[in-house]
Image 1 (cartoon, protein in one colour):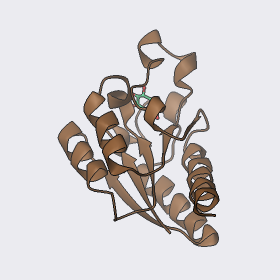
Image 2 (cartoon, protein in one colour):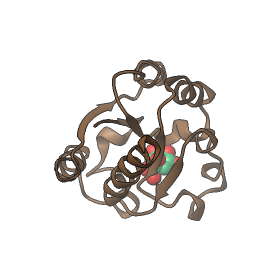
Image 3 (cartoon, rainbow, N blue to C red):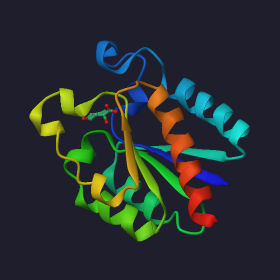
Length: 147
Ligand code: DQA
């Protein structure tokens, strides 16, 4: 099984970026932990990060046939991007929306997600561990829907 893990703007800054909100783990450390968990689940994880909306749109939209599922933390684009939402839909793949922080406990402008309606589910609020939980969830979903 192949899972694509997609990270949007400012997430390459994890480790130094507002550690009180996002924790001290770097994106590289989180990706390594998700890959290790993937090994134990029989899933390979391909990770992609970009600060550029169009690159995220292209990568997600071109995932059909390249992966079995998606983990997407689109950062602030979560709250603004219909294009990323459309790319998730176009991929035809099950997608789990991920956030390190509990966006609902934060500013009101973070409460809306354009992505949630086209995702199979959401995991948020557990720091870097959110991604490991999201990997479990997407692998579970892919296996369940294959039966
Ligand atoms: C985030 C939450 C977003 O509101 C914010 O813009 C981010 C990170 C999170 O993982 O908690 O960049 O997606």
